[in-house]
Image (cartoon, rainbow, N blue to C red; front, side):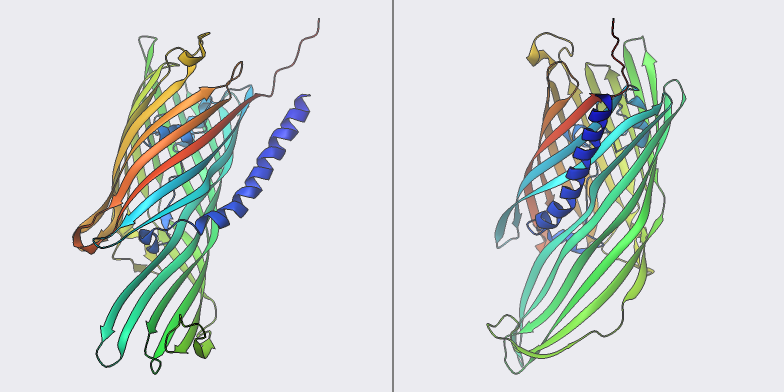
Length: 430
């Protein structure tokens, strides 16, 4: 029976894992963010449902029922007799606005899939999949040249990168653990640029670029849980990601037309590949984060986190992107369970709340793009098990209407499932 449970657990995870890739390709076509044009796209949050529900805090969070990717040292809290399988699915609605127009959209996507278990009492491990970046944008700028007439400049892109990770945590001594997440990053994204004239006597040009990227990503973590008066814990957590390189293969297709590209039957002049596939490297930035928490086990968790990412060092083929600058993120939040072992079901429900503020990596002139979000979550336990279902709500905004920029308001609902399965217990027969 035990062996059958393991096989079913891994088989289910594998099926969902494969579905994530096919569904991810579909979901990206519905997510539009003009700010994803820069670099390799918008960076995914890469956090568990518990972390998102508390306002994105997690560096100093340890839980036997949560796979906390934010700090790999947290895996040490896994139950030595259990296996965890966790995943999340989200629906997001958002509104993009400029000073003149607005646009609404809705998208659905898989946030992550992961599995964690114990190797020994002092060594715990986790594997999983999650999106690494997302890129979908379509921006058109109209203007006129007196001698040539009206024209449009269009920038569009879609795709993104995926992440498969393997994390390990090791206990150094009581309360102190270290960990590392080793990830393989891979994926494809496409960028298109077009200069389109309405005048049928003027040549219009479209350049379609395909980029295939892969690389390795490492994050090291440390946590220390100090007991206070045998009732409380003070948690300290820290994470660090060093400078790393990704490898990219790029090829461009140039197409020329006479007049309007978007005409019902556009006049094609020529199609060519100007060069063979070009290989180049990306220098990914280093990042560091620290968190401090105040905990009463099985009762409440309060935490504040800070994250710095050195995006000013990001380079593509040795060239800096002048739009990117260092980012700074502040987050605070917590969770509360009235009475985890109560016979009253409602007393065992966990409530999460939190907020976060970020000066993002994007800076246009003197304006650095800001992001703000507030979160609320509810975790519903199932009877006679540690398996639970979570619902996480987030409302936030990105950007500004100042200096002719774009502002996005969004609202997302995440469904988080945590399966907690006993693996290593033997049934005693009298």
